[in-house]
Image 1 (spheres, one colour):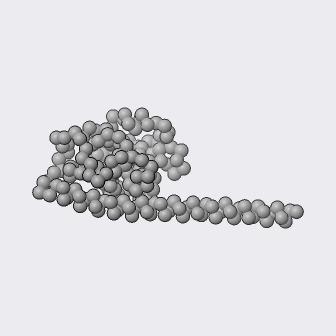
Image 2: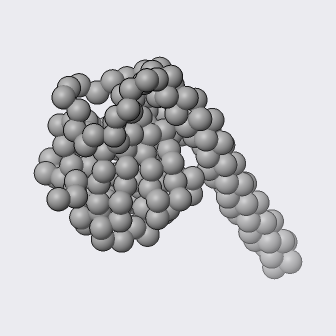
Length: 193
């Protein structure tokens, strides 16, 4: 009897190891796929911005318009130099879109209440917690306007702290889940003075 019980536990243990390996491989695949999709979308997006704004040169800080231009479901792209990331930003937030690219969750750069959410994939916001005070972030909108920001603070929030993110009084907020999903990493940015 003890021998059969030992074999049963061994078999169950092997099943758990196989399940963990399968989960790891699935997450690795999802992260890689998201990175590839983001790279493809970024190239197309940068081409669209150049094409739309051909003949116009614009890198002013704040455009005259307060509306956010949306083309093919995108509002622009985000550049995070410290993390060596350039990511397209989709206009509407939902779980399926988050698997592809960061999404606008709220606001706009023109109204200084811009909130962007992304998965914690290595190829998205997985390294957000590595940012340091005053680190620059750039957002280029579909009109070719480059919005400059600097990190003011970085914090961990409860998943239901939506009010803190949406009404932060910061110009830009980037946030993602921590690995395990029990909390959120939120980076608060303001325009440099």
